[in-house]
Figure 1 (tube, rainbow, N blue to C red):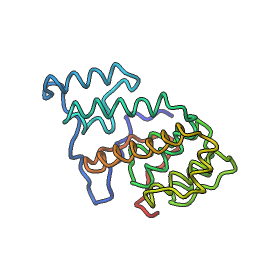
Figure 2: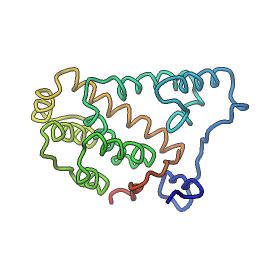
Figure 3: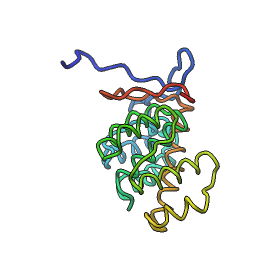
Figure 4: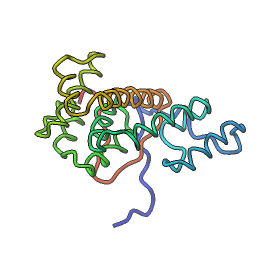
Length: 205
């Protein structure tokens, strides 16, 4: 049954009543640079101003440059989509970002990441996988997020599967998504509900 009205956005943050700090600016309140940046974003693969670009539009040149990096990493990286989406889910859980979790958990499942892995990530547990490339990606991403570096064993495993370019792009993907999650965490940018996917609980779960 289709609901008669859209579901309410999922608040970002775990305080009693977290209010969005930097909501979307109406076009009438945008300056010329902001309008141009918004139009460029809408004309690109994202098709709208949403998520991290809502607060980032306060700095339109920064938004455009950040957006170009993200556009490559999301849509043109040599990494398989399944690996990209898995990494994005790991980052979203690590920094407890509702927007990126609710956007990328469904995409990860569609790309072939097992539901059991996503359930483990949501609960703050290590997502064991029988797929060698997923295991290598999880090790690299989790070590990087937790320790700000990667062990020789994890680096060697990732290098063997993804090559030097893939390791660089996976590492940069972690940095990029951490950056945009932080921006949204500060701005309290809400997530959008997704059928069949729960919002993140306070971390650690």
